[in-house]
Length: 610
Ligand SMILES: [Zn+2]
Image (tube, rainbow, N blue to C red; front, top):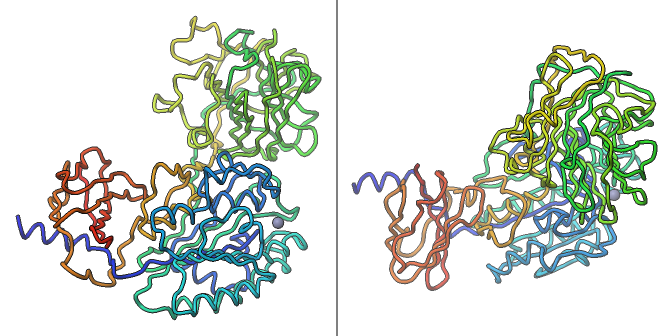
């Protein structure tokens, strides 16, 4: 047994507590990742090639600096920090603070510094910093960073914010094809070179992770809209132990076997029923897949239970728009209306469209798995109508503009599904694994393939076939080979991942009480193989791997934390309480973070088996 134990310890080497983990975060406002690759930016490109990189990460709209930096630096989305523009009118940083406050709460001696060109980052967001500096220019910022990194005592975490790339984007446009924008990125690359050199010249017992991040993307129009180019962000992270990896967005491809062709006289209706009338307070979600041609007349509806002659009329509609060939969601109660716009869909491709309505909160719209916009809908009152729920027509069934395209997989839920659920299940065939399966009240896959009856497949419908859709005229069906492609944001790197990634590198457990929204992009406490364990030698424990318990051989009282591969703190244990019970953990490799009575910290890895 003894030799097996030794072998396993060797296979999972101890981390290096004598090493000091440190992090440099280089923030570049409004910087597009594809423009970094197109620019004369050798240092940024080298960082991307030497560690973790993604050029297909995502933020949420609205894409403003106040929103983006808040999400990145607090580790939670705008639904929590509540900063949706640059006015910082009602931020919730007291509940969802800058990550310096999280680190400070568990490591109060760490040196945390924030040097920024865009002053609101420090004035509004940053707290618990050891030092805050607001600099008048990117050049002054770089000089201050180099000076801090050349001093004897370097910071443990240094955040930098460069602002001039965003200015160039507003002047010339944000695009990898625009020379003025690329020149600004080349200038930042030049400014960060001596900063990276200063990091490289630090003493050998310091292990630095360098991250490069941005608050938002942009396009030739600017930012503040909901376009894919504005939402897309890059994230780079390189340093000792961090594997070279380029991670794309997680896209799901779903086949659609057959389609019903909608046209001038072809639509479908589900008879009016209390189940699909949402009154004054009922939350709901509507999803569908749509394929539209390159152009069309007017603003025909995909899904509607109202008279679409006016957006104020009671009821809701998912429709095309007359100008721009995008789509929109409208809801009205006779007096008030709320409207939200999606992105263009006039490309002959399938798109997943979704709308969630939290009646005393926000309406949100989604396209292909991504959030497109939100609006306060609390003023909307009674939306019930006496009309049928129609596919390809409005509730009157006589709207002058008829949908000419395809529609399928209509899903109606009696709940406002959350953003992650919408994204993870966008277009995915429904199973009982859907977290809100109990709230599905209507589901018309529209894969019937023949005839004019569209079966509602919700199990246990109140009366079988009562809520089937019917096609008043003859339906035409066609075989289909075009797939639906959506993005799963829950598996795609996102802006909220930056804080968990920093914590993971610093071996600071991500406390579930903090309710951070992101996930670490690198394994927690990556072993670097550098440094030696001082003092009494490594803590020993057995068995490893283990199914249920870990026995620790420690002298005196120790505090033991178990950190999951994604950096989350999953167990907290004080020795003297017996062995650590790990039986409930998901199988995988975990980190033990052991603090002795004097506060010295050591790390070890173990494997939890099935
Ligand atoms: Zn800007």
